[in-house]
Image (cartoon, rainbow, N blue to C red):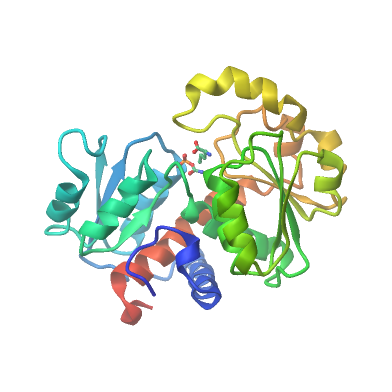
Length: 306
Ligand code: CP
Ligand code: NVA
């Protein structure tokens, strides 16, 4: 396994399944009150350039539950000190670094210059921790075999979607991006993923065909962190792509509703959908804790840690 957790594309199918199994195992242990102090005495530095509820709380709580400790740094990388220098200081003190950045290049820069593992806690390009937790939730609700499953991602072709297609390049999941023309994002990432994909990957602006036979309908905010100035224009462009009861009815009758959160209720999703029995958004959020604990234990604890 590679040193860092930057992109799901860096891992084999076997390694991803191993992380999901470990996440299930740690979840069970946590629920049964069985101690699993796999990172006793270890410290994680957490760099956050952007706001967070789930990621920050789950990394900090996860380190605590694993017997370790975390240090929070709310700072903009490269302003006071260069990224390589931040990495070369931190690795003298801590056993791992997690970073939520604007520029994806800064996560890569930390990983290149730090001798300790670096974990991507969301960049403008990818959100691998989210999709690992989402995959765990999907397995819990639909079983471990993804090969016949179709996930319709309705919304912006951005960091969360890119991590889904990275997963679909390794595990046999069918993913369709349903978005207004012009918001597909970097289609080169999709084309690259297609060349190695285990399942079918496609893009459409047609909601009806995009959602047909979908087992899960996923959405994300229309304007991501850093795109606040585009919020009004995006609200207009995406209005027809709101996941409401009518749109959910285009998918399979028992389709799951998924969202990475935070949700902008009334924009990309309505209350009736996110609060419906089909919604598993809080299961996804819960799994952020367990999935990240698996990543932390695997990267910072070594094979002897579990
Ligand atoms: N889904 C997610 O990453 O949430 P936060 O931005 O609150 O961390
Ligand atoms: N695409 C969103 C995800 C938030 C978890 C963003 O980058 O803001």
